[in-house]
Image 1: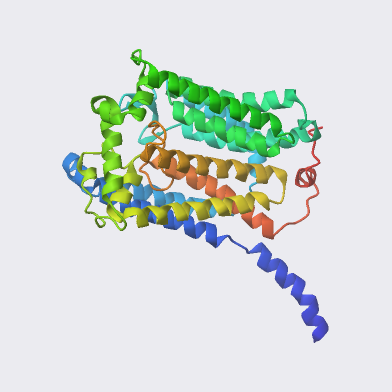
Image 2: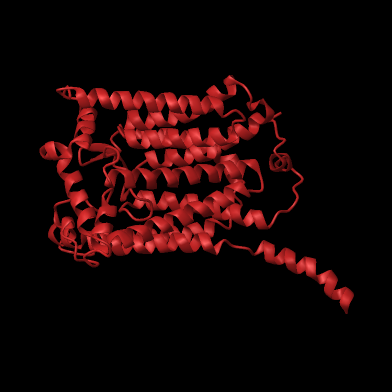
Length: 405
């Protein structure tokens, strides 16, 4: 009997590992999405009632997209992430084609910005697809390079792959903030894979110095020269002096942040969302959270994001192969960047960029593609706990010895 029990233990352990699922990551995703829906209804019920005669207009649309996205994420997380190795080039090219189509009759403008594509009732921002393209395609390039990664020529190829997507987002969709995020995601993936970090640190220091000098020059200039982006910087530096040209939204967001106190005015009792903060459901929703739930509510949201980022960091660190590790690194960078940039905009630490708060801000395209990234992370997390040997070329990829020959 003892021999039978001892022989059965490894098989039972194998089954448990095969059935493993990262419920911690899934739980924090659902919590953030649910919290976002509650705050979205509180933020938009008044304006939705005025514009559409239905106080649940924005809530119902976002709830529908979120529910579908979560279900699909859970289902897709059961699919082996390795399929993305073979689809990476298709996704990369598809992202470029979709962004180029924005300038065709299929493109749609919203609030003066032509960034959308419409295929019948389906409307989305193709620049969001470019983020996934970089997250998937760059790891494939890096793994294929193998030991040949050392050198400036491979570095130039990797930077070019990221820069092409970023440039397309800037040129075709006129979305500078998304272009910057795409490039920063690419740089993060390259930084993690690149064996030499000294060059990155020097480049970062030089870039920071040039950016600071540029801001000081704009701040000291007597005129913005009519340039829209120069004006944004001046509004950021002195919002109280430019309330008619962009500073009004920033000032009202700061009022919302400051008026909430420790525990806020109470859910639904905020006043800045009634029109003082235009389109508060997008990039300024954090200020409404702090007004209604106070500093306590803001800390809860930030804590949830910190745990989400921690889980992604853990999965990236323990990924079964280099390809999956770099993919999750890209997802980690994407979520971290968007959260940091959104919070900085709400606190007026940086100029307004239009970057939304993941899982919380309104937007069907954003929540669907974010859930697609979470599906990849969940798939990789399952592979951490269950690994089976392969007899094809993937065995070399798993060991990090694949050179593309």
